[in-house]
Length: 91
Length: 191
Image 1: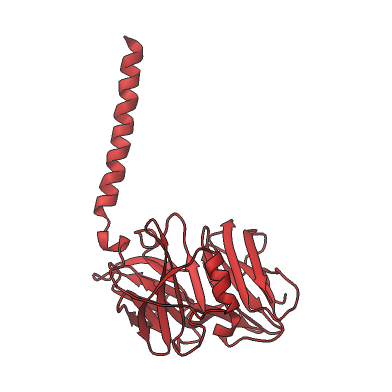
Image 2: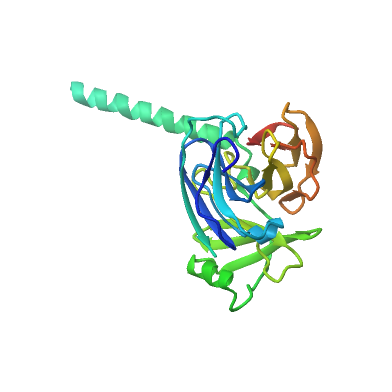
């Protein structure tokens, strides 16, 4: 986790599928994967769920699933926000 | 006699509130609650572990709505009028890259006129996430989707074709989306 407001949701692995659901919290989160210097993912609003595959992003190798909490104003920089996000990954 | 009067007053208030709700709904463009594009059935690769995962999740009726450039766009019907939407590489053996589902307010609706499937990312040194690839579904009432910079300035305007908008090479300054109707009114912004 190298970006302010981000939380890792798994350990490192060769993940090929991520399911995530935004159950409650701030209006929007960025859910996806990270490596040592890059985060890729999809915005989720409260009640949204996503199934995604990092191969579609040109992102392979050793990854961690992650979520970044964004503010209502569109920046993922606000500390102190929390969100209830459900994650499931397959390796 | 006093209690029936109070009860009647309560009913009037409820009726007025219901009327206000209906009026608001009637004012909304019905096209915002509709996706008219028709798709063709798609069969997922048999034996693929991702197919197994989707079947176990109840995804059986999948149709391709459109192909734009190197990307395909899908509707995944769940029955009872409910659907999720997805996209993926048009040339990949496994067709789906992302599937997104919504709950109340679900897409398509006046509250959710677009279902954005864009890939968002950031690298070390970036001060905020930006769009890597822009794509998604728009209801019939959406005419265009604008890409905007952090100051809200429009830097690219995307048409909506077959209920789909897309851009494979958005500017690195693109950090917001705005969906507009035919009159140019902003219907929603993301994020």
